[in-house]
Length: 42
Length: 480
Image (tube, each protein chain N blue to C red):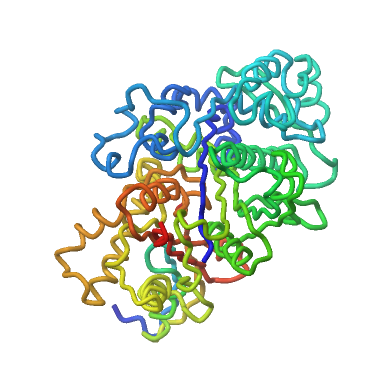
């Protein structure tokens, strides 16, 4: 998927890939991260 | 190095309080009688006591036996399940309500007269909080119409039994303070009572430290005890110490979401190592807000709501006695600010780096205690098997570091991990429930080294995007 120029909401999980890590990947791929959140399911 | 001399782990079965958990309260707001809705899914004490994860929690069943126990666990009860175990007990609700009232020094929680009388009679003969202990007894109850008036006119939270009967009520501590509502005070009292019960169990062990010799306690529960001017003011540790009869103790609270217990154990070890204190107790009570957190998944799958217990624990950290397992202060794993959030970097910070400092690898650890949430509580709600996810991530680290092959991941998880068996009680489920098993395994058993890792979801408080993590090595005392 081409992310350059796209707006991204980075949703992560504490026990998987956290939001900031998702956001970092999206940013490096040229996306604009508009919201970063991490969920904790416990 | 400091040692962990003893630990206690307790559960209080509170089916009627499930209604007052955060999720049920919010989700059933439009339901006229939530207790009627929940009743078909609430277990009695016999079922909760015979539930194999709960028996593992109090030390009656080993973690390897749990792995071999038929599933679903809620349909395969343990035969002749005991209330008491080597690590603690599963207290029934009628007694725990009395314990709640006994922990309330401001007479805000009132029980119905008959409920209070029954609880007092039952608790009088309790081995660790009974008549022979220094603990405050259950106060007299009040008439039913007094409870009804408190609920109708004074903003008290009603305590409804599973059958719908009014068992008691909790008044607010201040009429204009959102941090002292009846609901908040009940949550705080539940935390205090379960921590107090765990502490009394710890102090009642053969050869345990005398209550008068405990000079410092660290509470690491998650309840924000305070008032409108200081929401998380504290100090639960001191309140529990007072109730449990530790007359010469003081203490403080350490908070880091679910990672609190690991920070607290580390700090307790440091206080002992420094020589400031000879004996430090780390403790925490349970989270009423997390009762029934995944109840919708349990209802959907027509299974019992297994998040019907409050948990508590206490651990005694002391100077090296030559016997008890050693807490390695020279090999503490830390998720630092600069560790970032990439899973591999976090795993290295928590495992590889501290182990390397001690000249070890993950293969030198017999058993890892990570997130131990009971998957039977989380999977029906779509939250996955949290322990398994964490163990597989750890095994993947071992693959990356070329310590095991990719095809050995399952064996690594099976032999160095364990099934989750803890109620979803946040900070307690994070590594702590294995502590009693580890102490036995590292003294009389076959374990040589264990590693405990707690994780905290700091981002939930909206002050940082970071999570938290601390790992501790607990190993056999070589002077033994």
